[in-house]
Image (cartoon, rainbow, N blue to C red; front, side, top):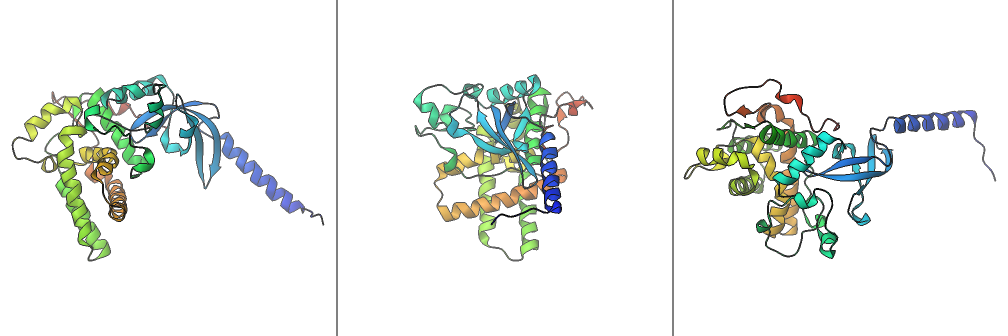
Length: 311
């Protein structure tokens, strides 16, 4: 009952094996290599345990250094960066900026540490009063497109390392962007449910409330005081650069809002569609360079690109 293979079968098999081997040899990361891995906009040290090429993309099985094996996971290439001194400086700066110093190397060895969600970004302990820590599987998942994730990191570099700010007021502002999206959906889908407009209004309200509390870097606060006096709302002054930061914080904000399942699923779908809309209009909505407060422009400011390994 044995079966035989023809020479063409053997040839095809050999060709397939050669193709796989060629793919493996071209892997940008190696098994056992120490890397930095993105979770939202935070970076964590990890080690590559396994590699596979599947569905025309690389996938890497990571172990997060200092964390239990239960946190091991498969990630795609746009979640990874080379473990270099320069990238480590960026990681530590991000940790410090977002009050994430405790996660700079590894969590404490207490039993409570095992319940801390990897990648959870807390500005300070006062923002979350509950003793119960939010686990990742309890949060709504918003996959920010890689080009927008790069925008977030470049935004961080412009402001914290190069001393530049977004020149205000922005055009288009956040209100303009939401209106443009609503008009786009109306044109694309015809008459749409009122819920889409309500979701946009809700996100705008979230932005206005969250910006002064958790969306500003320290060196942007004086600018905020000058740009938004009295009854001026941030959504009329700020643009896409600051709006994008909202979607990093939004999963936790929505968790504490106790939104019902069906409504939350609809909200998630609309937000993912909106993020795709931002990505398609990235050149129109986002600045390519920021403003130097002393009005001195430096054409070499684009020298830094923390996500040079993202494809």
